[in-house]
Image 1: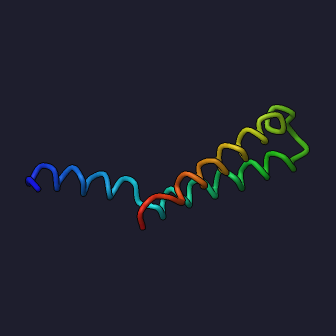
Image 2: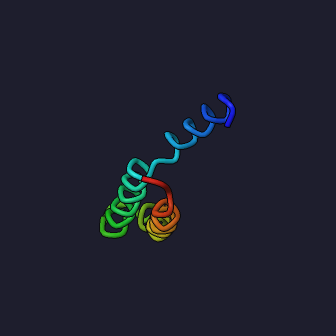
Image 3: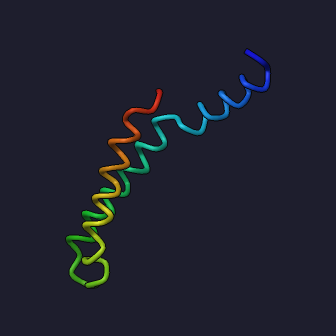
Amino acid sequence: MSDSAKKSRSLLARIFRRGPWENTATIMIAAGIFMLMQPFSLWLFGWSFAMILTGTLGFVIVSHFPE
């Protein structure tokens, strides 16, 4: 394997690590649940399902990333 191929592979391996992306997806799910339960803004309530769905789909995809 050439040196540039190793560098690009290691860069992709660093970008697509599971840990930070799982944390981001979990935070999105938690934010969506908060948006669903708050009584102040109808706009937040309206977008809560989209936020929960995006976080859940992100978590499913990210769970296949390497450790």
